[in-house]
Structures are given as C-alpha cells and as structure tokens.
Length: 241
Image (cartoon, rainbow, N blue to C red; front, top):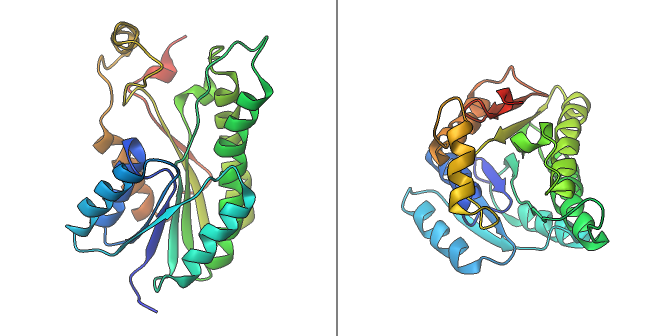
C-alpha cells in the first residue's frame, strides 16, 4: 500500500468536478475519477491529471443505483492508496413546475443529489480509518426558493443538513463539510440573456471562476479545524432578496 493518499470525486469528468480533481491532483492526491456517461471527457481529464505526475483511476457508475455504489467502493479497496478524501460532486438538475413535476424527476434528483452522497459517505468512512475529509457539493440554491427546480433545491437543502449530521457522527476522525457555489458555469438550462441578467444582479457583478470554487476545497484540505460547515462561494448572491 502506497502512502500517497487517494481522493475520490464523483461526477468529475467536467465542469466543477474536473476543477476539484485537478486541485486535488495538484495537492499530491492520487485520483479516482468517477463519471456516469461522459466517458470521453473523463478520459481527457484523466490525461490532464497524469501530466501532473499523479496516479489516476477511472470508474463509470450510475450512483442512483445503490449496488453501483458498492461496486465503486470495491474498486477503492483494490487501489493501492488509502482513501483520504471524498468529494460528492455528481448531481442532476431537473426543471419543472412543482404542481406537475413527474415523480421520475423528483426521484432522479433526490437519489443522485442526496441519497448517493449519503451512501458514498457511509462507505467512505469505513475506509478512512486514519482520518479523512468528506466534501458535499451543494449550491446557493439550497437557501433559495427556486420554483423552477423544486427537486434540485430540496435535494441541496437536504445535503447541507446531511453535512451537519455526518460531521457530528463521523467526528473526530473524519471531517464533513460542504461547498455551495453560486453562478460559476452557465447551464444549458439558462439562456445567455438570462445568465447575463442573473450576473448583473450580483453584488460583485461577475460569475465566479472554477479556480475560486476549487480554492474552497483547498482551504478545507488544509484547515483541519473546520467541520459541519457550508462554505458559500457566490459573489454575494445569497445577499439578494
């Protein structure tokens, strides 16, 4: 078994998940890069990680299936690096009206955004026998009433509550925190005009960068006296009514 620590990041092929794995690789962690369907992007991200001189392993899994989570952590057991960091980044964001949102869209968000981090954390803490860090990726929307994204908003609010519960339960050996980004990467669900309107309302008048969100992860890696907290990195979005 190598002494180099392992970090598992779910949903790490692209967007913020990619920023997290690159930050962890720069900090010397071997990487287990999880993806669901973005195989080509996952492969490209793995290539970038290898240029940093750290080992990288890939795993495809549908985390809405609890059996696939068990299989993912069976792979962790085969990797010759001790698991020290879990970043629960994989998420789904169904759009819909609360009056007629289909059950499948409710379940898809809750199963991936809330149940999967819970099950992954259960498996991770079993393996973090010498301490570790779990980070749940929330959203500023957890504290907003986004009626177009009911299941997403509820799942992220639940994730922040779960963060506190796990932090208390897993202490003192494993710390659990959350990062809640604001407007960082434009989604396909938002038009350019709507994106510009949202950004213009921010007190800081600009979207965040992937590097700024990743720096919150690096802070949590280094400051070992923080647990049960949600770091909101949103350019002042949460200050708006």
